Length: 110
Image (cartoon, rainbow, N blue to C red; front, side, top):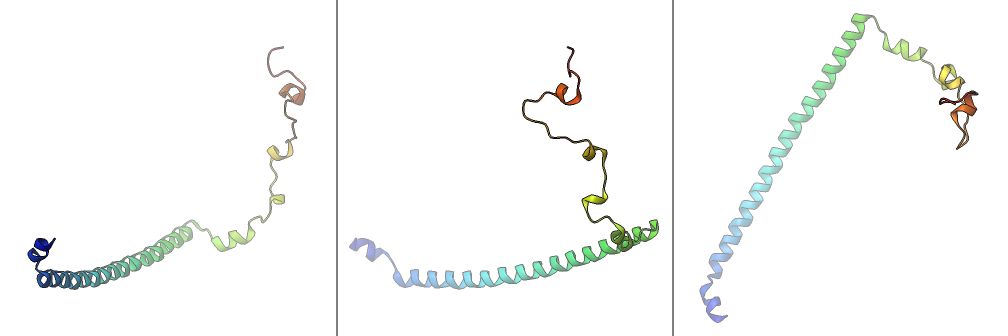
């Protein structure tokens, strides 16, 4: 153990650790600056794409003569307004009840 302590140059190791800490700190600051720059650029692109997409959608709807706000106010608001033949003909079936007993005929060749 004593020979190992003599072989270590503590001031040199402390200097290396100090330099490492300094460089690491500089690297962290550069990383944060780059991250902020990329975030700013990407954020602007997303906003531009959304606005451009909205403009194109409005242009297409105008070309085909659709007034989206008018159609939304005229849309049905509840299920009561929609009638479907599938809904009217539904009937509860007990477990084990055969299709033949429901329709009044045998589902397979009897």
